[in-house]
Image (tube, helix red, strand yellow):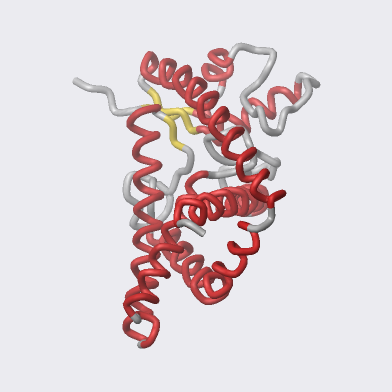
Length: 244
């Protein structure tokens, strides 16, 4: 199987499983969701998180590189490889969060209450989680990846699913980018940053109070204009430092 198809399969698998992990985390453990609602995580509409898909591809490439260099043969080499995995995942998280924060004025996650955080986008605690996730991948998943992907490559039904996924994913990114542009316009006009998950929770609560149908995937869809929700959702906004 070509490297491109391998990475495409891994991106699909990582995006979907990462979405499931984030969904459960936000439901049961996240402090930003005190009412423990089921909230669709992430920037996109569908059940996938590109950050995790990209992360799984990076973990695969690092593990393959480590095998080719014999890093797994010694404790020191293995420790170095695991550190590289944690640093890489943290870097992906930081760059993704920074781009959305600078470009779209959106904050998808908020670590500002965590010790040692950098701009609320990364922190030592979640870097530790990335390290544990990287170790779990290296020891329990990577040894079986090539065999599993080879099976998937010869399964035409799964190849159809992969093609369908990327078609839907492309449309989803275009739709979500358009929505982000509307949020950015509001944020720039009001000099605020939109806390995306808090906004979703606010709209979900408002629809529940108004006995409106709650859309799990289209979390921002409502009978009220989006700008009206943004103005009312004090908990979904944070003031930026005003210039001069």
